[in-house]
Length: 218
Image 1 (spheres, rainbow, N blue to C red):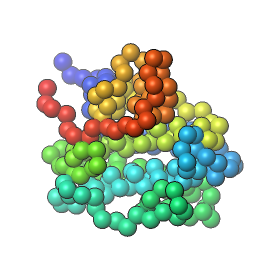
Image 2: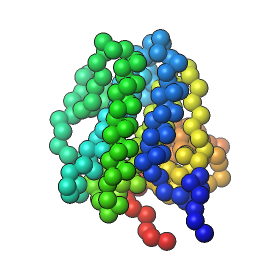
Image 3: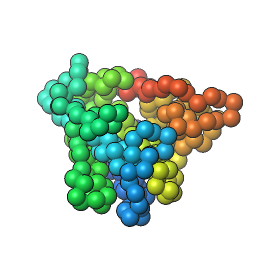
């Protein structure tokens, strides 16, 4: 029996990256006039810095899969820099002169890069990540998780609604978080798994990770 795209066991794809980024931009665009220098949820970064970090994640995942062959033992050696102590270390920064609308355009562009690279990469490609050498599906899932949880952070800071689709949350949980609780809805499970929420009877994790290695063939 073939798997339907909404099944938690279905693979995470380039289309999911595209969808997640589109939903994130649509959710944040109504807050263009807000103060994007406020703190993003429970993070120590501002909303502006968090979106730059998210764009940088998407760019970096695309870049990691780009070389032929992709590096399996280290990151592609870009020069990551911090613009302030405690801020995110990025390659990607948005021109402040273009305001939040320009920042969201940078996010869209980096999301498109990861979408295209995942779509065109060989399924046999493997590339380094600190949480495990991953295949293109793994990098797609990582990009989706980064998008879902950092948009949650920014939406909380800006006071806008963010309710990502349950099927998307469920599939990245199944792909990257084998120990995620199965008895709660996918979004709360994802937020708990990334240290952003409490669940009844479960203390919030003080440290967390995902597992990007390819799934064993069933």
